[in-house]
Image (cartoon, rainbow, N blue to C red; front, side):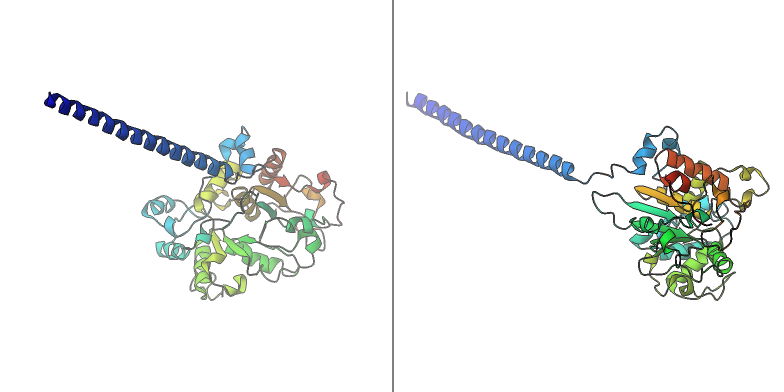
Length: 370
């Protein structure tokens, strides 16, 4: 009898312990579930609170267009820096001539230049994009259409302003503004501009603490000049031997001041956007998009909103070649660029709402004197 009661007591004790254990386990499960739910809710709220992409971004417009969604590749490498000097890249790019590769360029010159592009500023056009805002860029060409345009204030109101080659602002502030964020060039176009437009007032390339320089690698001399500029030493060899880069870019030698367009990007812009018929002629090796065209396409692949000023339009024959010429000069066409093809591209991108192209008469602006 006593054994029976001991067994019964043992069973009851086990039941009580089981109830207590599973009760506590249930409470723990509920608490854990509540905690997980709260965490999930917080994650969802955090995602909802994250800044949205620019709702009027040109990328969204391009991706919605039946034609341009297949042409634009916003993942293409725009800039080149130290980590791009790899064996695989060398194998590919050493087979292509400049500006689309490194064929016939000494590997040491290329690698020693890229090695110096080791700052985060070399990897992106803009180091900082304000949250919940659209990055607005103006790309200012040098076309005569800007003479008398009075677009200077409008240009300067953009977050960033791109200029290139003979970018004269002094004396033309009302028409072209004063702000310069980026100055784009090849060493050849930069030096030619300093010679050709000296009489018009282009006495120096744009300089300033906030200005960054975008090299277009069209030749070996671009790599050599860039390397010398970062190192703060005279150009050691080649066409520009003895040149002091500080004459063109100021005394600061930080890598932060410089950017280098990627050969892949140059090839992509040519083949996707500007595959000129010139490529089928004896002048094929001379052809590449214009400096202004490359700056505009660079902006279209890095900014949310882009406005182009001073670029060729259908009314180009009404204006002088450049806005700073005292007497009207006819725009001349050469085999190294296809400006008429570029004109049609800018016009179409404007029509599609992917960018804004200043076309003067169509914008109800007063005609200038030039």
